[in-house]
Length: 165
Length: 219
Ligand code: HEM
Ligand code: FES
Image (cartoon, rainbow over all chains, first blue to last red; front, side, top):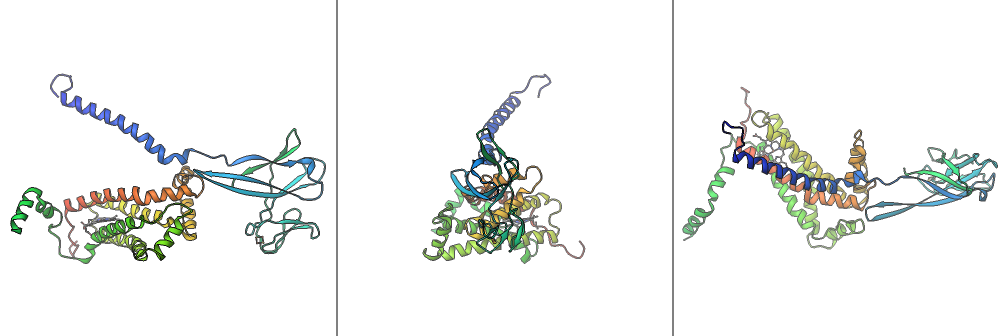
């Protein structure tokens, strides 16, 4: 720099090149970072209200089965998983409902309601759960999972709140 | 005649200078432990070459990855050899790089003026482990699948940003085709490119400072 405040030709070029380089770096850098890190920003809704049938279709006092399918999307890959469970209406009151998952807590086989045994039986390792989902016998470590959040809409559909594990 | 040709070439290429600067350096009294860096370099190159050969048959897709490996092992001439070298070489490289680091530590060679050599070396160790982590998934068998399930979850346990790290590693919330594709890309392009660059800096620093002398009783 000379004694004057004016910028020298060299410094001007350095600063200009630096600035242009910086702008180019950002212009290139943002897309590159976005391209690689996109999965961090794109979230798939992992929860939803799922209709499982008309309330009146479920008989009071007897567990009745329901099932639904959720599709997971990973890029170009779609994986459908089916879920199932049982609805037990304890009374006319639409709040008095017990909804259990039919996924055995041992190794994820599907349990079935058995009227004669008055329990849920697992075909895989002979587990038995009570009508409340408690383990009566067999290897499962925990009671059947419950869908505790449910509601009935204006049209009389029973919906459960589902969250991806 | 050959001498003339050599002189002619040398006059233009100047390779002797490069040779003197890179390989014909003064060394402290020979010690086998000092060969481990070169052994790491050799293994890196070996993994590079065998890895390139593997990509001739390997397919990074959930539908074909496993079968393409079976094909390499059972049907490709010397496929078992190429894969075997790459497979065992990966473990060996981690060990050798690690022992190289231990020797640098034990001989206190990380001290002034070689702090940066050490720091870039740490980068090399991490990148080498990254190669192992990404490569392990590629055969897409039960072991690799579940190892990656666990490994990405461990990364996901970081406070606050863990979930984002897990998604970036997996290419989404689940282990999927995208995970395999990402790990493949990381394993054959991104990490090797970083490794090569950091090795370059590491070796430049080694040459610039020369080998540290072996500590003796006075040290
Ligand atoms: C891909 C991995 C690596 C390669 C290819 C590599 C290569 C080399 C080579 C060829 C040398 C000179 C010969 C020798 O001393 O053995 C060297 C020296 C050195 N390396 Fe590495 N290295 C790697 C990893 C590491 C790691 C993980 C560290 C430590 C964290 C490290 C720290 C050093 C230091 C401080 C020296 C200087 C030693 C001295 O001057 O005595 N390197 N490296
Ligand atoms: S899976 Fe149900 S008892 Fe084993």
